[in-house]
Length: 547
Ligand code: AMP
Image 1 (tube, rainbow, N blue to C red):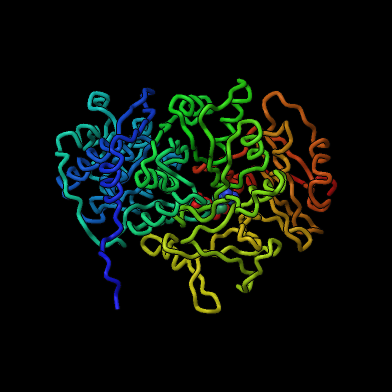
Image 2: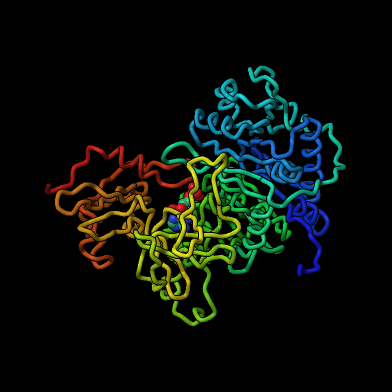
């Protein structure tokens, strides 16, 4: 017997229809590439998304055709989120920080038909347009009068001219909720990038879950600044959850430096911000050196890589901002866990609570997770045993676009399929997951594992250290030993010996790195994470002391 409830597909167009009808006057504010501030409402987003949809119909794009973007966080990008997916096409967000050849490769692999780009990226488009075989229309996301006459790019039109002639009347189509809605290629540190292909259903379920109080806790009372880019895993789904809840959205455009972010937070009364640790490091450095405080910000979600304890402490103690540590992946749309306390933790002392906040958090309903040993056997959730982290759920990939790389899933002893995350983690009795490492970054010393994240966290707790990356170096006796590459804060002085001494009492003696290597910078990848593969290459001639 079936239930007798209405069968309505979960579609992205419903989000924007809902936003227009129920909080149409909610604000969406963007710092534009030109530098000025653009301000309009959710009703305007809805109206212009329908113009985008009409434009794609007029261009005769078929259902599921890909429309790519190479763009910062901004209002036109938001209109494409709803107009492209809502009309049944697939929004393909491309990371502009990738090498131009890789961008061309990705556009060809996805068979993009249209590519919309911010003017910042005009030089990239000029370099790659002749290599992109499937793109019929290039769209510069600017006003008509801002489009230079002689770009050398055929079939180029300004975004405003492209959608401007179209009606804002549009009946959003209804279709199967499992239809593809958007796609994002993984960073591809090894081999060619592979794409996660999200569906309307997975996106809506993720948007619901992301808004929950113990997840991102997004509400109509928030003004949210997603510093996390719309070109990487849909800005953690914030554009969708904001439409669903009626939150005000504040987009930073290309201004990711500490000063620009701070000004936007203060100017727009931002209550809530989301980003990777490297961005927050820049913000905190700017605030500290200028003696600034926040007047509205009260929460921030930090994820994408491990958030150093020192950063959580600074946000909370110096600025009164609650940090929510999050873990996720491109393959998970991206949210997997968020760290919030339970009722029973409220009576704990601050240091006890801090021990919990440092973990990556509890699984969100919709993501099931477990840890297994090398043989695939389940490990206990006791906070001590660590193993490969497996996940499953309706917003976790089943396979990559075009079946690239074969099935990524593994079967457990009950025949249930799981996605292996490539992360090594513990899960405690309360369900809090803690990432020990990326499986390929763990340091294996004398048959024991050393967490590179733990070593880095201790280093960045030192007042003179800006950034730290720990890698394993070959050792004849121990197999591998950890060393830590350190970037000092401007004008800070700290010696190798002092830093090594700083580890005393903070970790087991055998886990203390064998050496500190001072470097000017640590290579950062396209999604703001440290590129340890590159660091290992840079230090390939390094020899451990006392060998
Ligand atoms: P990506 O798909 O490029 O977003 O990368 C996902 C990977 O980033 C995960 O598998 C983790 O290795 C890492 N990651 C994301 N969030 C965290 C976090 N809070 N702590 C540690 N690692 C993280």
